[in-house]
Length: 358
Image (tube, rainbow, N blue to C red; front, side):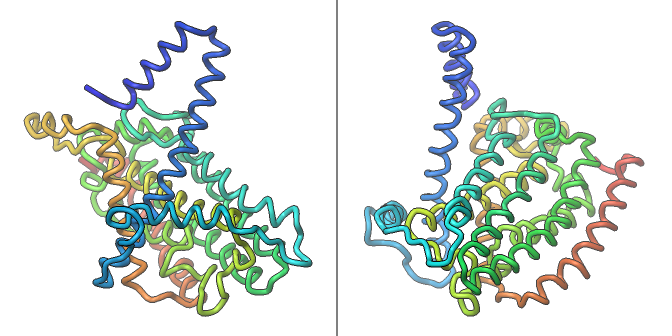
């Protein structure tokens, strides 16, 4: 059956038969880099259009419908507009840090793609501490935001960056504890082990109450970590103009804009992998007829279907909940989510020790 893993294996065999091992490795690394950049560009175009379509649907209007058939080329037109715009650097700004910040945001997003399993046997790097790698690298994102805010020589930018720093550092704790619930139940930090542990049912179904609580907290925490509404205090238009990227224009602004959507995709991909089985089809115990029917759906369809479902949830939040104040945001984390996450982790640990899950 056709699959991404089959295509990758065919390419690897052809390269191995044509070139020596060193050149094969170099060519494969270049191809992987090009594939990641292409995926970035494609996801950026799709997610921006999806955001606008979801917003239009929520507000009972049409949305983009002028550029291309059914407005499908609107994202490409917006990208072209940003590319041809002049990139300005404010007077008094730290030019080096100002120009480097958006590239750090993009590099971090690219690094986070490495351990994600997009389909069965289709993964750039299945390292044995995959979950730890994702949580560690994702925490670097706040550095690019602080660099952008401080180097802009703008009070609004600096205030937005400081808010974002407090927000991301705070909500990383709850997100991390939610992830640890799955690690405790699985007994591994490796992404492939976590997916294979869900071959007889996704953790969201067989993990009982602790996994359900972890899933809810994880969605709330990653929504805050990615600066999405109702937690978008770092770029609150009514207060801070545009927040930490107020002074950015042209392609540098486009990089920040793209990095935000790529981060939304990555956190949703991690959530789909941990709680919804990643590329693993929906299986119910020993119901072989149902399980065999589910196996006919390609694993990449399962992965992207689950991921885009979680992306839709996060976009839904934007048009459902009002923006919180900064004190409400931090109270929610430190007074409610963090204590609940810690108690929930203890409960999950007891469950894992006693074997109280399906």
